[in-house]
Structures are given as C-alpha cells and as structure tokens.
Image (cartoon, rainbow, N blue to C red; front, side, top):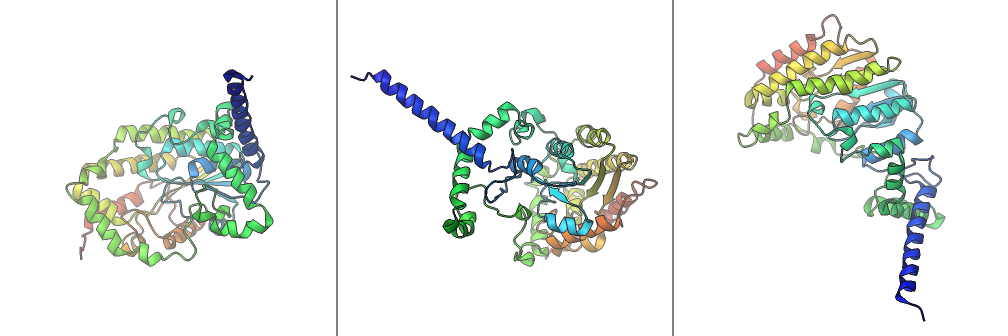
Length: 368
C-alpha cells in the first residue's frame, strides 16, 4: 500500500519536472532573444524596459537611440534612412537618467559607437538607485544567475514560448500572427520596427491638434493641479544626476559620439511654468544653461537645441498635449539632426536658451 508520503513524493517530483520543463522550453525558444537570435519567427514586446535587454543582445547596430515618450514613436527604419546609420531604438516611456544611462552602457558594451539621446529636464529628477530599481531588472541585462533564473523560471515567459511554438506551425502561422495583437500575449509585434511605433495609418490630426494642446494647458495650470508642475524639480539634485548619469557616461566612453538633443516642447509647456510655477521655470532654465555649458565642452558631444524653433513649437497643431509632438515633428527632428542646423555653438552655449526665454516672456495664450 502506498503511503501518503509516496504520493507527496510523486507530486513533488512531477512539480519539479514541470518547472524544469517550462524552464527548458523558455531556454530553447528564448522569446526575449536573450541568448541567441530567434529560432522561430521573432516577435517583440512593447514592454521596452524588458525588451531592450533582448534587443541589445540579438540585434545588429552601430547607434543607440535613447529617450523618453518624446522619442518612443520613432521607427528605426526612419532613423537609419535619415542619418545613414544602423540604429537600435531603446527609448523608454517615463524613464529617468539612471535607467537610460544604464541601458546605454549595455548598448555601448555591445558595440554602439554613436548615441542619439533625447534629453529632457524631467529625466534628472530623483529616482531609485539602479540596483534597487523595481521597474528595470539590471540582472536581466547583465545576465547574472539571478537574472537568467528569473527569466527561465517565469511562467509568463513559458507561456510566450509555448505560443511561439504553436504560432510557428505552418497552418496556424498566418491566422495566429494576425490575431496576436488581440491575444493575451506580450510578444505580439512581428517587426522590430513596430516597437512602440504608431500604426502607419494612424490619424495624426485627430490626436495632435491645437484643441488638445490648449486643453492640456488649461488642465495643468488649473490652481488645483498647478503645484504638480514643479513636482520633483530640485536644481541641486538634478545637476548631480546629470553629472553622474550623462557626463559620467560620456566621459567613460571618449570613443563614442553622442548626439544629444533637447526636444521641441510646445511653447505652452514653458508658458505654463511661467504663469503657474515660475520657480520651476527658473530651475529648468538654470539646468539647461548648466547642461549646455557642460556638454559643449566635451569633445565627443554634439548638442542640438530644438526648443526655440518658433514655426514648430508655436504651432499647437503639432502637439497632443503641451509636450508630446506628432510624427510630423519626429521627421523634422531627424532632418535637423542630419543637417546639424540647430547644433549649439560651444562659443555661445546659451544662445538658443536666451531666444527661448524671450519667446516665453512674450507669448500670450489665446484660449478659445
């Protein structure tokens, strides 16, 4: 007669076998492409903080493209075509300078010889130390034992691996590929070019227009909410993070060229600070002056400032709120980077900032 311990032992062995089987499945399929390029048809996720770890390992590139949500909708193919490079887009929505610097360090270690970096002031607010960051797994990027184990023994990754195998069966390939965006799977994009990119048939005018920009301005300057304009803005803290995360990375890699650009916010972003939080505007302008003066003295940096291009930043139809610009402006950004038209002159590092200050002072909001 079998004792309860016999049944318990079998259950335990069966559980161990299932767990090891799932880990083996994830290792073989490797949906993140952390160990090797895809053996099955490759699919990608919009969870960029995770996906970037696999992209850095599996893709061929000479240039890393970094930024926040202001740089997230660029397509790699457009970047490559405009600048004559082979890029890897690593932009992460809501990312801070610690996260960006860490990910760029990994990309440089894998061969990036140029970095294009969209750098906005908010990335330098205080944040968790990268080793304790709950949103970005440094162990996954470094492929430590802890990181590899968390990947291989993840039930979510096992599910993705199983679906990848099913999706590779010839009769199921086309229907499942078409259905993937609507299924509860994370790796739904069949083209790396589509990671966090807007659909090619996206209705730009509906999402980016003056009505939305003005509504956003009214929302953030409402006295009930205006205090949030300055949340996290501390000049000394932001300078310290800039020096550590940006200048530190740049000086550690003198053989890497850094094209850093200050993105074309709408004029309403600065006017909102002027009207509702002038102390925040002063922090932003003082920080910009420090950034411009420091970066223009580094030999491997080209700094571009797009914030005072009046024909773009004053055209509120280019924006979906006071910050985020449309794909039309994305294309202009690439043109400006290629031409160097708005590169900051090291002999006059604050010239474009002075122009922006004058525009902000003179601007008057015409509410409907």
